[in-house]
Length: 77
Image (cartoon, rainbow, N blue to C red; front, top):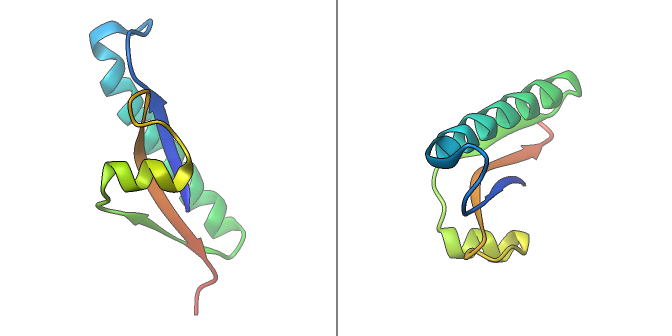
């Protein structure tokens, strides 16, 4: 799995930062799908996950970072 995370708190984007983070997570996900397809792999976005468990899985502190997007990669049948 490949998580996309972002830092919390004030950024140069101020109130729009959250929206920019979600847009960037979508762009990264799109690139993962394209790269997986080019290499003959399958990609599947994880539609729902628990925040604290996801943060523990990838080793981040949920007080300072959030997991925004998970993508599972594998070899298709």
